Image 1 (tube, rainbow, N blue to C red):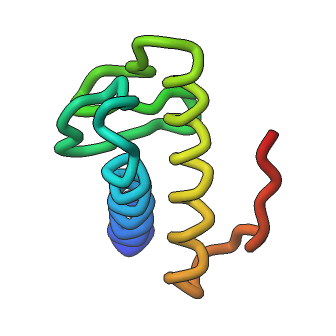
Image 2: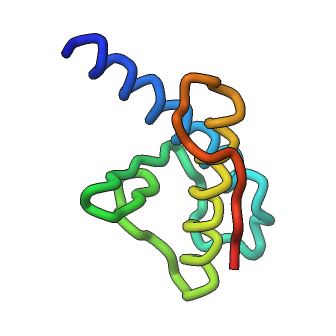
Length: 93
């Protein structure tokens, strides 16, 4: 069980870092998020947090950026870590 917890932490950290990298590339003048220090998430609770604030976005378009950045971060992490058991494709709408 300890190995599973370690693996989950590694995977979640990679997803968080990749999502943060996408958010950091957003143009500052259009960003709802300001300085992004960290991204956390919980699949079972259906939330994404920036700097500890869940589902933080100042506008509907900001929420789209957040969710798409997370999806892209998840895809990117799965491409970087071959141990991910996720489909390696993405469809955004």
